[in-house]
Image 1 (cartoon, helix red, strand yellow):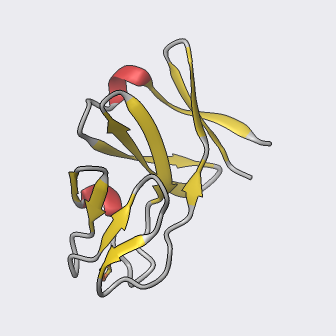
Image 2 (tube, rainbow, N blue to C red):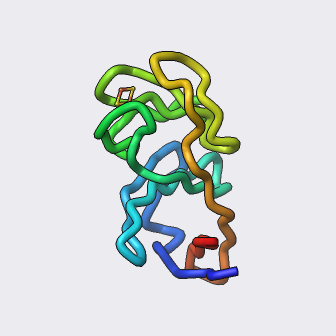
Length: 102
Ligand code: FES
């Protein structure tokens, strides 16, 4: 376990996604109805930041070729993506959002 603070709870509005970086790892932090999820920020298809994409119903659409991932599981939902995006465990402590980098 390697928990690191990556944001404040108020940094990401419900329904929004935010780019974060910790230990030089680019992450996308999602707020789904005040439940937080985190994935690696770089799409598994090519070089695009999922945090620049479109978030709806717990799915993030990549801004480059419109591949879609389920942010809870990291599973690809719609092509051209066919490889999972890495997910990270998230917990909230007070006003802080932490991710487990292991
Ligand atoms: Fe994300 Fe192509 S870079 S779908």
